Length: 267
Image 1: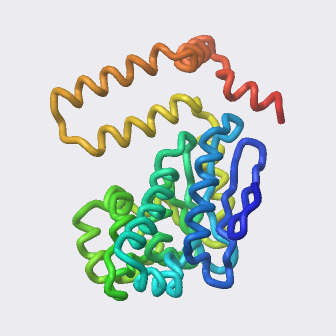
Image 2: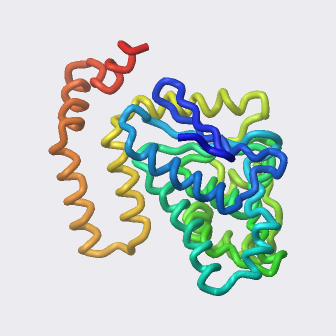
Image 3: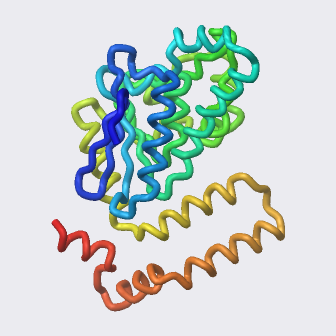
C-alpha cells in the first residue's frame, strides 16, 4: 500500500512507520490520520513484524493538528466535527491496541496529537532536544481524544498541570513524569531505540500481546474480586498456550526458545 504522508519500512522483524510531512513538522490532517489508521490495521495482521517504531521525518516527531485543517473543522457542522474527531480517536486506539510492542522515537516537537501518539505507544524514547506539550487550551481547545493515553502515561495529577497550562515539557521532565522511558543525545537516539528493540525481540510474541492486553485490562479497573478472577483466567489461558510451554521447556533445558533460535537462523 502506498501513502502520501507516511513511509512504511521493514528491517528484518521491525516495522518503521515514518510520519513524512516534514515541511509542516508532520502535522495531522484527515489524510495523515486515515493513513496512520490503515497502516496500523495492516501491521496488526502481520506475524512477521515483531516490533513497531513510530518516528517523524525532518526536524520534528509531530506538531499535532494542522492549524489550517483545524480551522476548516471549526467551520464544519457538529456532526462532521464529531465524525472527524472519531477518526483520530480510532487511529489512536488502533495504535494503542496493536499486538506488537510499539516504540515512539521522539525528536524535536511532539505537541498535541503528537504527544498523544507518543503516549499511545508502549515505550517512548526521546532525544534530549525533544519537547512535548498538550497545547490545545492555548487555541481554545481541549486535548480530548488524546487524554486517555496521556493520562495513562503521566497520571491525572500531572495531566492537571499540563492540560491546563500547556507548558512545554522538556525531555528530562518527560522522563521524570513518566512520559518518556529513556532520553538520549540526538546522535545516540537510534542506538537507544535499537537496544529496546533487541530486548523486545527476546520475548515471546504471543506473551507480549497477552501482556499488553493485561496492562489495559488491569489499569482500567480498581482492585476487586472480579479483577482477581480476570487476572487468574488470563494467566491460565497464557500458560496453556504453545509459546508458554516452549518458553518454559527451553529455560529448563538451558536452550533458546523457538522465537529466538528461528530468527537467528533466518539472519
